[in-house]
Length: 217
Ligand SMILES: [Fe+2]
Ligand SMILES: [Fe+2]
Image (cartoon, rainbow, N blue to C red; front, side):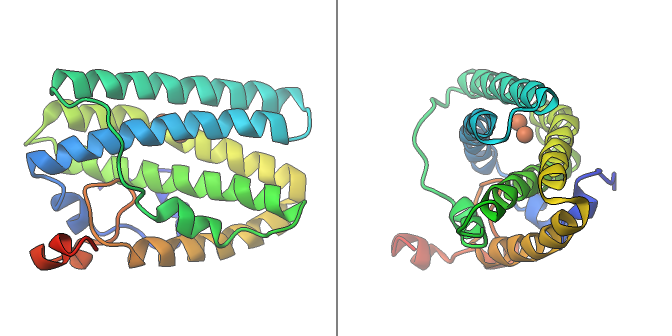
């Protein structure tokens, strides 16, 4: 298995079974739609940070480039969806981002540092899972596997940028301690989510039964 720079920083790795359970065509289509939403949100998040972090040319350039890169990913995902006759549509919230927010300090300046670290954690988890999907889907969907493999390096860079800004704002030691706490929180959040064809869903063992799906759980 290829190790990515980001996956080593997570508190709990994703089991390969999660990616194996995403092999059916219906899952791959939903994952692509999810990807489009995630890329768009990632671009918006980066633009928001441009206005929130103190003015520092390196950060401004880095965040601007990051936002542009996420929009390029968004457009690439839309093209793939179009080729598969799957239109862009709303999707139910996965619960991941909302769960992560609960771990964020409510007061400044800790809040901004936490938000940057949570953005880095989302990048890290996305990177780890895209790498898993790239490895798992090659024999059923070469195009999708290559697409994920292409994005992995960019998402790892995004994680690094958010972590660097957080470390410069809070100091390396404080940021590292906070990273450990938030990474542990992230691992608990994602382990408790139901399994779904979403990049940030829970483990395959949490798959809902058909009855639970019908109940709208
Ligand atoms: Fe992206
Ligand atoms: Fe990203």
